[in-house]
Image (cartoon, helix red, strand yellow):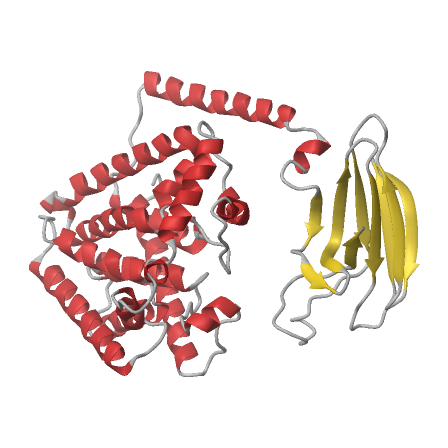
Length: 449
């Protein structure tokens, strides 16, 4: 925002072309030139992410870029090149299957009608883009193309499908996020905590989901992960940014490009109510690039405001230091589980089995006694060395050949809890060895008695 306007415009232009390249990659995936999605979930749904983080990100990116590209931010090219870019962005949005991206585009084009600085040419271009998107969606609905926006919109209104599937399990995700907020109302559960806590949160309802997900709302995620403090900070930022963008975009002297950018970003902030999209790194980058161009340039601040901001920074630093000191104990690492570095349990002939990672650890309560079996199964046919340490001191070391099992008895100290940390010299990833689509890092196979 403090950079020269030409620098900001060039950076944003590069971002728009990056999104166009991502949309082109999705098209090449569809026609078979590029390989399909590698994650099993996206393969199952038939949606395409192109060069973006995932299909949801691609849809949001294409919708944002399409709205901003309508005014082209004073770029000099015309005609076929501009039309080609718009067509690729529309195709990327449709192939992504992102209903949030489609909603963003609709809202942005509606908001363009209220922006005084937008020229009739930009409005006409917006309606043409919307009409082309709708026609393409209808054509894909009639063809029953799975994974596209058309297919997903058809599923959303299909009464034969369960309501939970039609709304992507959002009610269950929202309830889980509220439970996380209730357990940590002031500071929240921590940034990114919802996804890995989701199985535990759903267990309260005796439910399970096949994949981990975000809460399905950026604002509910802010409430659950950052608490009341972070939620009001988020709302304050959103309202301030929206007011600046709308105020500047309604000024005729600023031109159509800022009007289109403001409409796109306000639509994005509204769409956040139904998706946690700005937490994806590529979406976040484009969002703040557009915001830095759409708002007014930074101005000098008064001494009082500078003092308040410096005080807030020092207050945050003090709070962070207190948090570090309060959690600087090994037990805090095992707050939510006595195991670290273990994959989910799998059914075995004599009980549950767990694959470990290359590094894993167990937390032992005072006087606890645990029998642990560690087996070395690998397709590589090479031995491994396993080292166990307590408080940095090596207490056990052994070399295991393929197929060999080590039997250990772990005993906790009588007066305190302790962590036993294991290190394995080698691990393997089944997908890299082309054994399966399993992307996990696998070390040893463990069983507890």
